[in-house]
Length: 569
Image (cartoon, rainbow, N blue to C red; front, side, top):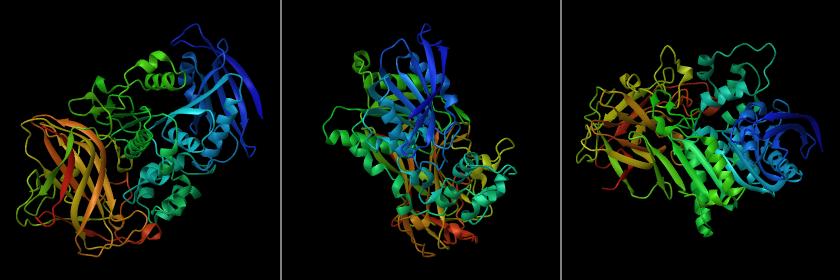
């Protein structure tokens, strides 16, 4: 069942200026009768062809320019408003219906006279996740996808190491939920600091049930099972193009999705069908050179449309010219020297895990303290470092400025020096490099720590200190103490007990040039990109707080170190 609303001619000005592209608006019925607004862009002079489908909650009209380009390139471009958004019927409950709706939409597409039976999907973030959700339904006709900067585990979309990406999910929820007519503007400073977390939607100003549910289930338990798709990826028999940036909060997820798919292909001894492109970007800057405060140069610029078109030429059109092009499975950008490199897998071969040890005489607080980073492990006892993590004054994720208030912290590279002036930040700096240091792969920190509270966070940053002193964050991670052993079954800390913990800093590739220094920062918060830990262990329904005294040890029987995959020499 569908209804045609309009058919408008569009003169496409790119790729083929003579092609007259028309757009038809259709109401496509899902299995439960809900109708979704769908625009179909096509060149009427062409016979039935392959289809590129995009399903978005962000207004299908905003995809007009890319849809016209795709149609001019010989595809039928189908752009659809997700359920409960813009022109579509129903109610938006994020991701709740996207698998079924995606499958139903693909089924409808393949029945149309203008479709040759081959369908691909494209888009990033939410628009990327709906591709995985549709794919695991195994709809006939879906033969290739291009999920950019997205997840296959909804839990890991929101949580890292047990801490929730608070500013991201709270602001997204406020902007994508039904707002009362009399709603007041949100006071984000007080909202992000509000306890208990279970009341965040009330603090925003109106009920958002799905947000409350996400914030009150910090454990990876049955609540998340329906949208835990990662285990189903190896069974998907279709090529996928993965594009993401190191500073993107979905970097770990996108890279993991690629490695899972690539391993499954190798197990079936099939030809390589998956590609990963890793750049120096955050979530909003994919394909650009300027990311937050750092310009990575013209080499960092990527024409994402051209990459996607080439992908679909290869896998939807089966174009001989596209199939004949070289196909490195991994293309990654090395920050610092700012060049692209090719590899057969991630992590790339030729790199070996190398430990850089945290050392000090017991006072590593601030960049002016005694903290140092060394390739040599301590051979004798060194006094531990301590800091106080105060939930009333959490360490910020990025420096607060007049133009960037606390609530507007960014994921991309910014100068860490103002944060490194805080007494609650431990700073370990290496010697000035006399030769370039190159690394590429997944970075982690293994720390021996303790706290005097039943819970505490350890946030770790890897930093490149430039010759002029600019301290550029390269990678970061966080671990909530009670999740140290398991995301499914958290356990409180025993005050004073020493634990070895592993903090995942995600994928990164960089070359630190001569004159630069490698640095590691450790503190108790990464706020408000992640929620602050009240340190009480009460969980999302608790409103109490406690100041935690946190300790980092560095001695022969309790080494603390960051592990970098360094280029073999």
